[in-house]
Image 1 (cartoon, rainbow, N blue to C red):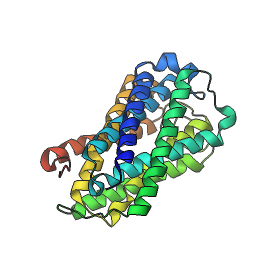
Image 2: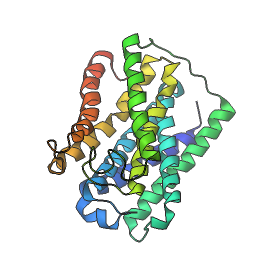
Image 3: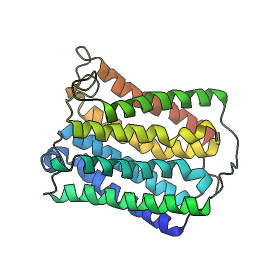
Image 4: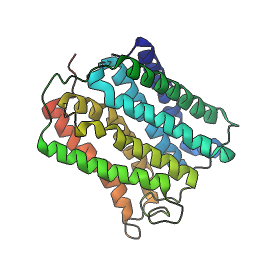
Amino acid sequence: MISNTSRLLTYLNAILYAILGALLFLLPEQLAPVFAWKVTAFMTMTIGGWCLGNAWLAWITARRWQWNLVFSALLYLWMFGVGELLVLFFFRDKLALAHPIAWLYFSTLIVNTVAAFIGIWEVIARRPALNPEGPRFSSTQFIFLIIFIIFVGFLGLYGCTTQIGAPGTNGGIFPEIMSLFTLRSFGVFYLTLALAVTPYLWNRDLNAILHHSIASYGLIVFITAAAFVYIRLFDFAARPGGLLYFGAYLGVGIPLLFVFWKLGTGKTG
């Protein structure tokens, strides 16, 4: 396993994301005007949902801290921090760091990125083994994995490459028009979600993917909760793509509850 330094940094990530996420999630109307770039209250609450989800993921992963169980959750966390920090760099001319909440967001990504580089270096140096200790997941579960990677990966690539005005960027799925800054941030989030589970295309460890699922479940809960709080922004009759936004989270979140009930959450130690 990688070192306790990485574990402590993962716990620190959990704390920082929890504080940041709670503020953005609970006070979106107040903090949207002073955030790191121009966002709406719904976008602010959604970003807060990412952060609260990351806090849960980092905490449960640091608690279990068994490489062959938590590797993909760490991969997601590392890629998220590096990716979102790169978005800030590429849009630095639009970055506003006048308010403490903006600095907290920036600082959290810095800590996340430091943890990522240390973790990646240790993985390269130590080459921890991925030795499955339990059963392999089924062919049906493998098919759902492929569907998830294709669908979420497409959303991520689309958000990272398309321009404003392209289909789906003018309130067609997310109910508000995003700036290119926000679109790229959302794109990185979805892309990291998809890339983090690609190792399961060849490593079909059931316990590991169950851990990844429970660690990621906070993202589903908080982002869906934000959507329900701002459901008034969705016009399903005029813009039915909004149903896809809800359906994507509910379509994953609800079946996973039955998976956890039947198979557990992957803890082996």
